Image 1 (cartoon, helix red, strand yellow):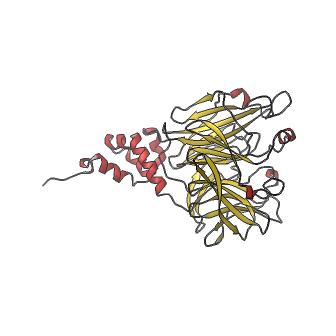
Image 2: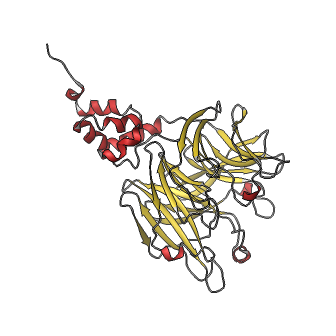
Image 3: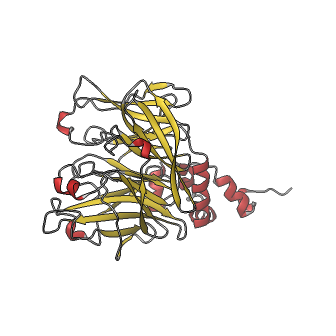
Length: 403
């Protein structure tokens, strides 16, 4: 009587079975034999694993990034439905000021930086919490400007180039001119980091239409930042026209663009009066604003058809809590950071499902940290967190992380 083992299965069948394993078990499986090692390390298998984990991701999970790693040195993945802890990830690095901000999350890969403005975007950290590996991006094509904090500023974003199958980081460098202006006679400089090549390269003659300081979001091949005046520079504010516009960067064409914010989000002076945030929702760029009359949260979705951008109002809801919108899950749950009216520096994270209007205190926030009042925002959160093999490089070096 003949017997059949796993090794007798066709490669496609074996791959289909292995794809159902967790990242932890996949890394362990590479030590079983050479066949499994080669299969799991195959780029086609890794691509299939990433696609599958995205499609099976928890639609109402929230990743909470601690603003102060000196107090909490781990990130928490929780359920917005039940507030229960799903995963806890120890942060394997430390920023200069021991504060942390999430720049972007794509397919399970996190880009983080220092939360304090003088250090933000100068040292960057790529991290896959499930694979338990990270890279610290210290180099730059414009390294001489990294240490000149008073005379330069940086803006970063991350995206995926589907043509080269590569994850990239874009960094814009603003340098003061002779009149002490960051948006003056010195043209912004731009560089791109390639995860596959592990190198930075300069984009020559890059045209950056506006100055952006706010954090942004990645949607379908492009990263978007909401323009925001630098708080300590009056000259910059005076040099600009309209204060609120959206800067975009296409990772395939490596080109910048500009999008207007929804007209209905602006007040009579042409500004956005209430707390606001760019997000990704339903596969589109979303702009969430707390508007004045009745304090409803309004969420617009951007459409891009035949080269024309337009906005559609998707939600308008009055919530039980007021604060800064942080993100929205695929399950239509808005995450809001509520500020206390009595305690300085006290915040709480709340979730509200925009369909059921069910509110929950997620049990996270900061408590009276007066020394960090200048840190803005107090929290950054991501939604979902696919359990992917991004940055898994194979070999015995990473097997120890699967314990």
